[in-house]
Image 1: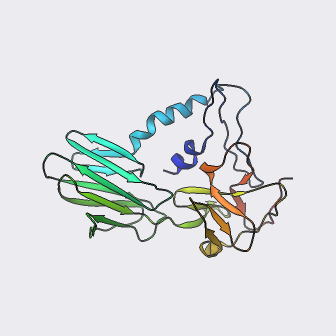
Image 2 (image 1 turned 90 degrees about the vertical axis):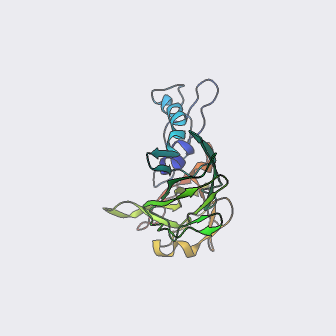
Image 3 (image 1 turned 30 degrees about the vertical axis):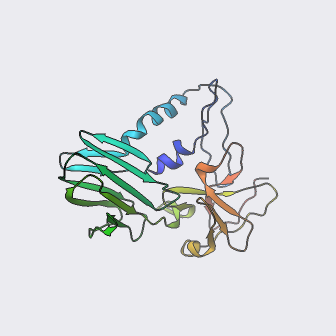
Length: 247
C-alpha cells in the first residue's frame, strides 16, 4: 500500500516521446521531482509494469472467501459474485463494499487493517459487525451474504512521525495514514523546526485533501503524490539538527 501511494503513485507520468521520472529524492536537505534528461532509460519499463500489475493486489481469494487488500474504487467479478468498492481513501477514512450475487451464500470476507491505525471498525448494512478489528491483521466477517449487502470499513487516518529505522529514531518522515507528507520548501520561506513526535497531532492542523499546516508558522505539508515537477519539498527531517536551507 505504501509503495502504491508513495512510489509509483507519486511518480511523474511518462510523457509522449519517452520522457520519464527516474529518481525519488528523499534527501534531508530537500529535493524535487524531475524528469530524466535521456528518454526511455534503463528502468523506465518498471513504471508500465507496475501500472499493469497493481489491480491484481486489490482483491485476493481462497477456498473460504474474499480478501480486501487495497482500498481503491474498483469492481470485482468472481464467478457469479460481483462486488464494488466505493471510497475516497486515503483522503477519507471509510470504504464501502457492495455485493451482488444470484442467491444467498455463506463465505468469509476479510479486510486488511493497517498496523498504523487506531480504533478501526466494520459495519454490515449500517450496523456494527461485532468482529475484532486489530491493527496489523485481517478483520473477518463470515456469514450468509445476499445481494445488496454492504460492508463499511472505517480506518482512522493517524497523523504521526515515522523514523528511518529502529537504529536511527530521530530522522523522521511525517505520515498521514499510508501517505508520506512532504513540507513545502520554497526558496525564500523560513524552514521551521518540527514538533516532537508526541506533539505532531496537536501542532499540525488539518486543512483539505490531506494537507496540513504547522500551527503558528507559514508552513504546509502535502501528500508526496500531490507534488508536481520541479517543486521543492522536504520528506525527511532530522529532529536533532537545525533545518538546513537548500539555497
